[in-house]
Amino acid sequence: MVQGSDSALQIAISDKEIQAYLQRHPFGIGHRSDFNQSALSSLRNSLRFRPQCPPSAWQLADPARLDLTAEEVSRIQNWFERLKVQESERSWAWQVLAWKISRIPRTTRSVLSIGCGAGIELILIRALLPHAELMAVDFDDKVPPAVKTAIGLRFSQTHFNDFLAANLERFDLVFCNHVLEHLFEPEITLALVRRSLKPGGSLVAGLPIEGCSDGVFASAMRRMASRPGALHILDIGVLDAGHAWKTNPGDLKATLENQGFCKIQLYLRKTQDGLIDTLARKIDVLLYACSFGAARESLKLLPPGLIADGMVRWFLAAERRCWFGANRLKNRFAREILAQATVAHSD
Image 1 (cartoon, rainbow, N blue to C red):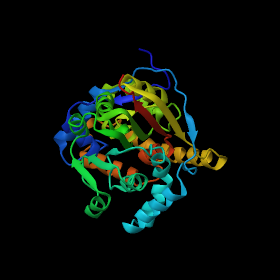
Image 2 (image 1 turned 60 degrees about the vertical axis):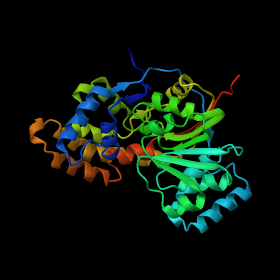
Image 3 (image 1 turned 180 degrees about the vertical axis):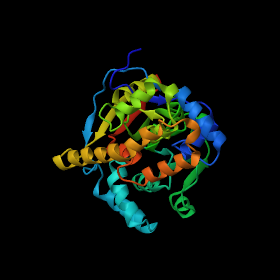
Image 4 (image 1 turned 90 degrees about the vertical axis):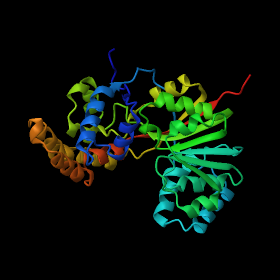
């Protein structure tokens, strides 16, 4: 199949142990050499293009324009005060989360948050839905006990798929922020999400769309997918195996439709595209190419036996700490989209 420049990419690994390892070590370098080799082998066997889909329409969303009432804003602020949320986390919540949370239907009575992290999104959801049942599931439990108690949260620490499979038609809403891009098997997880929703229920999900042709490393990642067997351990610093589903609007909409969702709406986050931002991107990409990019290509010329795990870890650690390293560049300039979809009512 000939792939177009906007074909999405997928790391399709089914082994849950390797999945978990790559989520904790997204560059394939942990402290177990056997797992490092297994992860690299799995990546070579699983990196592929996703089926091409027609382009999808989307609406532009300005994160500064919130669909919140004055009372809702006040309730959020009161919860922040009550739980003594740090100022940096409050600022992040208003800039990154609030425009997504505001899309939640106010008639929602039961909510499942997938991949809630430290739980800031749960505080906003509780402020908007004071009387709703609130549940969350994540691989790691990072929600402070005081927050759980205050907002009346029921938390489950387990694999998303296992939890969803055991809770059919239970929720009015499933919310997740920057979770779907981590899915190694998006069709399976989204099918389970749909089945966990009651008829008429909604999915509200924010995620980066890294499968677009205008991404900083779009061309490099497409070359890797064209020759996955030649994937080098240092390439994973560009690929970022933790983001297994590198989707785009067309692929995202088609995937949701294929798993039974309807009334799908996509909202692309408005970004700053002025001269200064364009110039900053070009300068940062040039700095990367002259430093880490050149060093990466030079090291890849060495025989594999001469590149020890320690050297790879040192290189990737140095790159991750630099603002023009591959991962920071990719994340900083990746576009972000919010998907809102519904489960059809029963006939």
